[in-house]
Figure 1 (tube, rainbow, N blue to C red):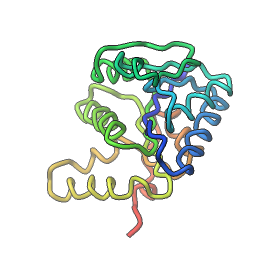
Figure 2 (cartoon, rainbow, N blue to C red):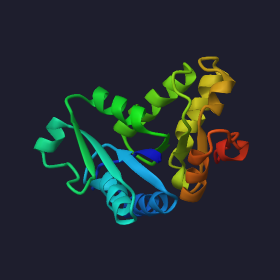
Figure 3 (cartoon, rainbow, N blue to C red):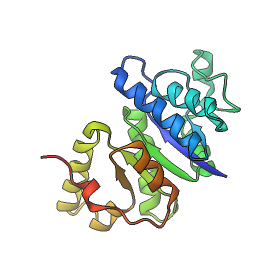
Length: 192
């Protein structure tokens, strides 16, 4: 079975377009035959993607630290809710169980999860597909920063091929499903 790990925002204060994107992602991943593993929350994009994935027939696994359950932030509708003590344990379990990784727009938590997975790919400790969904250019500045790292020789050009950048959900799921696909350069080019 294919299991997609989705990283995204848990905030309810975000623009509604991002909640819609999460709902679309949840429906699409279920329709494409993916199961979902994610941070276990019921708020923001996290809750939206989980509810729609579940409604579409996907198995939903949430991995959530105990302190977040205590704040009543867990998605009770998950098929499985794995309770952990630390954020590091949460990331490890999601990494182990996922077939591929998809980063939707998010904050520091999303960025932390994404960077850890990219480091594991760089060190050849992980060979699973990693995709950034660059909705409306959300990740443009991060991609520019990655390019700046290469230009300053802090990173190798080849490291930019360790992940894919998709403009929409359909492309993101196709890239996540195919570990052999070559990164399409046009998706990496960011707007000036």
